[in-house]
Length: 258
Image 1 (cartoon, helix red, strand yellow):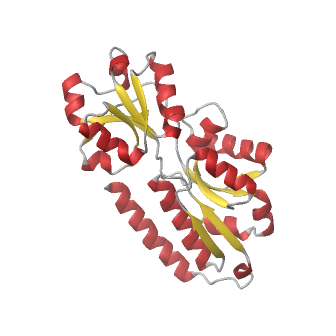
Image 2 (cartoon, helix red, strand yellow):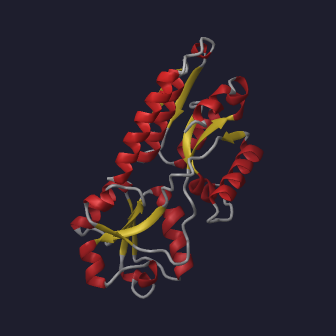
Image 3 (cartoon, helix red, strand yellow):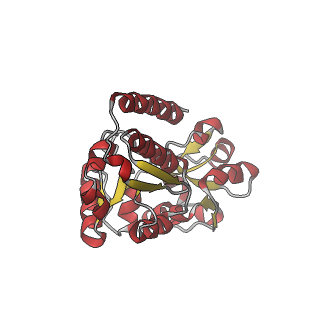
C-alpha cells in the first residue's frame, strides 16, 4: 500500500509541476511514442513520462504492456517506440554487467553500455525508488517450513516450486540458485501478478516478486531476506534513442524532473 500512496503523491506533484509549466509551441510538432513492459511499475512510469511530456506540448502516444525486455528493446531500436522506462538492475542483467549494490555506479555502467553498444541514452534515474526483485511466499508456507531467508532454501530448495515471469527467471531464479548453491525443483513461468494467486492456491511454493508490490502486504506474504546481496539496485530511468534526444534535447530536462 505504501507504493500506491507514493505513486499517488508523485502524480499529484507532477500535475502541479505540469500546471506551472507552459507548453512549447515547437514541441507540438514532435511526435513521441512511449512504451512499457507488462509490470505495473513500468506502466505507471510510462504514464508519468507521457503526462509530463504532453504538458510540455509534445504529441505523445503510449503503448503499454508490450511485453518483456527483449520486446521493448527491439521496439526501441527499430523506432516503433521512442522511450520506455527501464530499471538499472534489469539492464545490468540484460547487458551482462557486474552486479553492484552502489546505485550510482550501476547507473553509470548501464548508461555507458547503452550509449556505446546501442546508441541509446538512459536519462537520470529515480534513486528514491528501488523496485528490486525478491523471493517471497505465503505466511502459511513460511511458518510450515520455517522460511525466513534465502539461506533456508539451500537445504530444501530442490523440493520446492517457484513461479516467475520471464525476466524473473534470469534476473532472480538463476542468480539465487547460483549464489546459494541449489536448484529449485520446478520453475513455472507466469506473470508476476498471477504468481501470488498461484502460491495462495498451492500451485507453487514460492514466487519471484518486486519488493514494492502491494500484494506482499495485502496477501500477507513473507519476503525472504537475501544475505548474499544477490539482487542489484533497481532504479527506474527513461531509456530513449539518442537520435530522438539529439533533435529534442528538452525531453531530458522534462523527464529528469522525475
